[in-house]
Image (cartoon, rainbow, N blue to C red; front, side, top):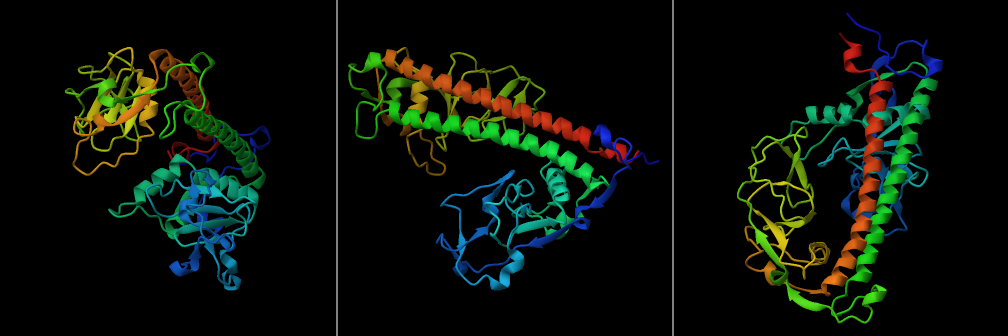
Length: 408
């Protein structure tokens, strides 16, 4: 039997309103795929009309930079239907994050031209499009895309597949708007907190540029008062400062681990924490902190907690003693530009011979303490953001009918 299609949590004024109706979103929007501009029609000249490309759309907002922005210099008279308006919903239709890259067009991007491989959804009213956006920007839609995307090539979703995605709609647009306003206000709060986190990261980057000597120099532009008359920084090989250990008890690729376990499984790459394991044999916990180094890519991560290594390609870099502060060395290593060749290991053969400039231990510690305090602020800010995201996720589970409630 079917139960009523009603969410667990409903605003007071809608508690006696009719049950929701489940429909494909194509019934509520006009969907348009972008125009196939020729390559010669796409320019970096900012005097042209901005183009809305898939690369401009990321998770929840539209981004711009000189590197990714492109423009159309031709006659747009015949392209009127591809001109974006405020509150249009745009979705990237291919790429590694297909289904996740979606955003609402703001006044700043109104007037841009929609390019191929981007879908534009336009609703008859703001209530409906903001309501649909919350569903498109949800795990349910992401799972739907993963389920239908069985191609071994570049991940892709079609206009037809977007149109066929079913969600439940309140029959009263005022209820749609009430829910959308609630969730959009949380989105704004998350965006605000994310901007603060980015500001802290930029502050740290700017500070590092002042606290460490520039190329060809032996003293930094900014020095703590007690070290202004201290000696110049000394040039040392990384092998003089760091020792290394190669993991012997590591998790191979087919080992199962999940977030219910306690020990993090690490890699030196961008993902960093791959999951968690309950395998205690070979957990690295002394000495800490250390630097995880990928011997193929030269990627690094600073680690100050017990962990399990992912593979034998990783090296665990440890300070050789009091004269080498692992935090300062890690930050200095981030400025090293080193191109790794495929199938070539670097720590033993070449990377350890790279020279960096480093101050005396007391000045190292002062710099490390300063940067650690900023890292703590960034971490606390990221914790706030994750808490807000978790709150929104839990709220959405209450504000929208679940599949279990729709059909029993």
